Image (tube, rainbow, N blue to C red; front, side, top):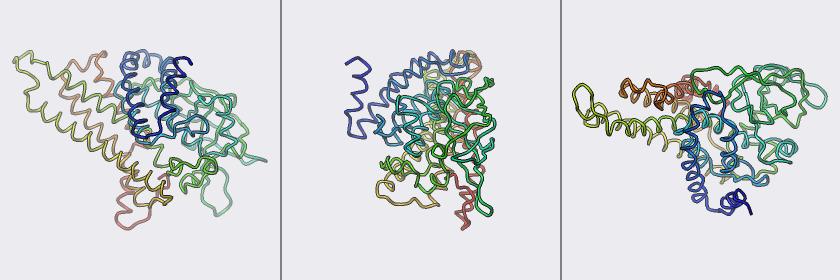
Length: 406
């Protein structure tokens, strides 16, 4: 048995959920310094390095939400997001890419078994990227669909052999829109290298272009099936993990990195402030009341955010394990909490950044990366709290939800 096989065997032998979480989080903490050191090169290359992808694979992180029948771990969602937070402290771009790409193992488990076999049958370590916004066109043809268009923001696409693309399938007159995810192999699309940004620079979130490609029916997944928790893949992947609504899993994959960013910013601020002495007055920065209150507020806020996330996933998993449907009012509240999280993290980082002084402006300071990247995360559609907040308020006031991505 080689070192990697021994490493895999360690987590494969774990049957206790708490021990699995502890082991995987410890691996993330151990990998963090390496990812942090690679941060500047990751940003310069505008994508996560092949070395980092291998490290994430070797640690078992991409297996966390993958079905056991393909060698996955079927870990509790809180374990997945605890790992992502640790990665976010070290390198926000790596954590963002990881969260988006790794969560696709969970959605692929909802697809028809034939699609799962096509992706993982020969290599269970195969990765899938995505772009869900329905910016392309799907035409129904015999046996499936013809897909054409351009999709943006496909994080980590250079490291993936398949892609999920969102589009509306033609529906019958009078029927609601049929939003689907279409699964395509690498040979059926091209990648345009247009990811030139000032935030989340290393995520490699490039455009994907498709020109009249056939996608068989079994390589599509209806969002309505994900909403109802009755997808084709549930016939073969029966764990409670796959009975959680799709709209509760994916949005958190793009909001959780912000928690890691904010926690990283707080750790950096504390480390600098503990030994900093004012050049003008010679006073210890740690004795400044503004610094003390900022740290107190940040620590309290981040503790509350973590607890809110953990409680939501505990409730979801408990309901799934009992085979009970999750009420719409809870889904709406959780969707709002996920989106609001990023704005709360932005506020934490902004206050710490404002108190850091001019040294935070230098490019070798981690604080500037935390500042830019948390604002970049806030720009994602799923992290905009306005729409989900209005919907949450509407439901609280007796109205009906207008958001079915819950």
